Length: 200
Image (cartoon, rainbow, N blue to C red; front, side):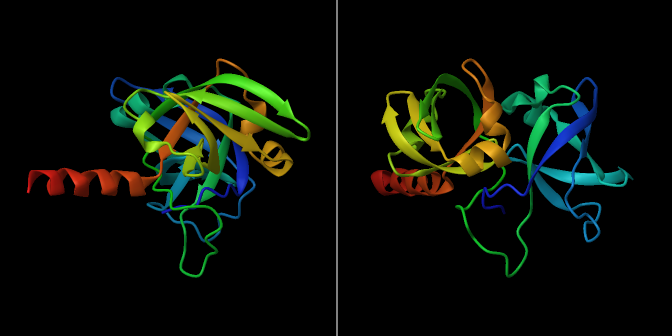
């Protein structure tokens, strides 16, 4: 589990693509001394398993076919900035919202509007995800926990404060860019329970 509070912006230093998977190495300033192979880390909001530590300050992960299909990693490039958050440990602060690291799909930036020191971003989402986005609800964009300010059809707006712009890769986004999106898991549980209630 994660909270959507980014702890570092790392860099993709290598990515090797195969027929049904890819192998990626990420460089980071995070303290990895307590990390072990098999640990989980959210990379741009996608929960990945650490497979090895090829060099100091660097970890490797394998991307499955499902991950490549649902995330932006199919188009990842060497040098690309990625948001990083290690998995929660007992006693860690819960500053964002419950984030699983199971990316639902990709969303596209429709508009970028300056709002004083802040920036408002409007995203377009697949029709299947639109029902799970509600005003003042939570959403994870590239792993960043954000509040939905506005919803209209198959698009929604979030507000990025200066801290988020400086300390995540969301500040680099422009119109037409794609991001990983994870909707609030609570909506999925409610939907599933309502389906059984309607059948009874």
